Amino acid sequence: MRSSQNDKVKTLRGIAVSPGIIIGKARLVDRSRVKILYQYLVNEQQVSREVDRFKEALQGAKEQIAAIKNKIPEPLRKHAFILETHLLIMDDSMFSNATIQTIQSEKINAEWALKKSVQNIEKLFTQIEDRYIKERIVDVQYVAERILRNLAGREQEDLFEIKERVIIVAHELSPADTSSINISKVMGFITDVGGRTSHAAIMAQSLKIPAVVGLEIVTHHVHDGTLLIVDGQTGDVIIDPDDEEIILYQEKQIQRDKFESGIIRLSHLPAETVDSLRVTVEANIELVEEVVSAKDNGAEGIGLYRTEYHYLRSSNLPKEDELFEDYKEVAEIIAPDPVTIRTLDLGGDRISAGIGLSKETNPALGLRAIRFSLRETDVFKNQLRAILRASAFGNVQLMFPMISGLQELLDARAILEKVMSDLEKEGIDYDRRVRVGVMVEVPSAVTVADILAGHVDFFSIGTNDLIQYALAIDRVNEHVAYMYQPFHPAILRLIRQVVEAAGKAEIKVALCGEMAGDPLCAPILLGLGIKELSMNPARIPIIKKVIRTLSVQECGSDVEKILQLETASRVREFISAKMQPLLNELDQADLIHSNPDRP
Ligand code: PEP
Ligand code: MG
Image (cartoon, rainbow, N blue to C red; front, side, top):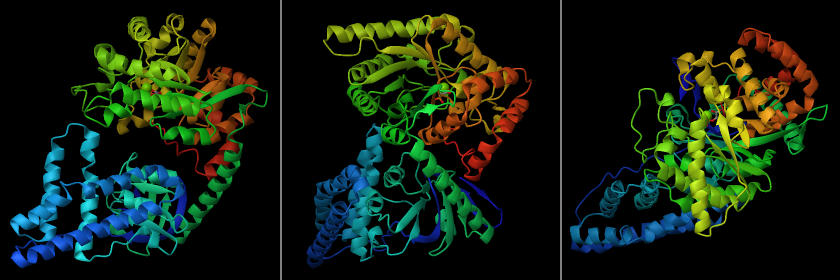
């Protein structure tokens, strides 16, 4: 989170998890933990009264959760299982019976006994290795919190009782909270905690309301009724904006709405240049949940399915079946269009607790991606089996990341052959003609692209890493971020070299780095001969719109001139001048600088 204006906090930046601009009054929802003020011993007669108090509070909590579950809005139905889990927790003997027994045996009040039960469960959870299950302790805490509120007679304001149009501001929102959101009243929400894949984030996307999480201290600076501007695209929250800021954002909102509804209407049309070159526009995804939004935005396939999530979320390695189910679902949803599943790209800034990668001095140059897979062959084979099995259910392509030369590719292919023959022996179905490609993202791979091309069905240029390695700029180091230049003549030459090698070998070449979603890069990439782009789903409508205004012939002759330019800034000037009218339109809607796929 970043904040500006030193003395008085005015603008906070959190994690933008669901897009849209909203301007409205804050409604502070108190979800602070109930403090147990009284822990006391009770006498024999009071024991049964405490047991009754607990039972009543428990029953009340069950009824509240059941009511929320019954009223759950349609877009959230698929998440109702979380509330069912909460009901199951309340029926669990470790939770309810244990509390009653503690009241009876230790003769203490209900709140204290409940706290002891939760502490015991927490202790058990600390011994669980699977990080995902371990994190489910929050569900036990949510439930306990609700019962404690009932015991304290403290009203738990249910969000569906909110009567005016507001922006919810909370430290944290539980699944029960987000399930009770009435979108005719709640404009959006912002929270102190949470991340991109938190329940609240996923719920906001399902409800299609703007949300920013991870603001850390927003609840300290906002009161009921404070005016707020929330930008769910950039993660900016402006507290108590002045008239100018309100007007600015109202305009942005109008521009964005107008622009987006215009392009979204057209996003399902093909991306065809004015001189009839058909460009394939696909989506980059990390979670199975993103496929639907990719399709909604007009994706013609998944050009990059990053598969690290299952390995990062848990300290245990994922099971083959778990991966298979996930890949199969993506393949089925996107079929007949293709999904390109990239094998593991762990290492670098993606460190998994379960895999025991040691800290390296230079992680980006260390045991990353295919290097890791070729060392941990069991992990690699497990994933390849899952991908191949999923290939029987759709149009699946397989891709190896960070290939730096032919030997690595041959080694990876040898393991793939072995996995294929194992599956054959076991009589397990897979697509025998599954297409295999490599990410071209290490400069040495560009130099030997002609050699690699003879051994694969396609290339996908990963410019995020290609820029990092070619220009020696750590992509996550803010001190050198200004040198991260997609328009650097070296980068443009590298791309051209890959396209030429692919052309000679008659294999396909796509580009899936962040450059693919940048409107200014589109004419250059088309001019360089790229006909397939894969990007963050949110960028697809804009890029399709840009492509429809271009002539590939003109892009080609512009690129000849661009390749003569000697610095990145001259290239940028050239292309900005060319694209000025379109840029003005995009800029007004603030759509140029808000690419969420920036590395
Ligand atoms: C890339 O390097 O350009 C790419 C798309 O892969 P990632 O960002 O996952 O490294
Ligand atoms: Mg990469």
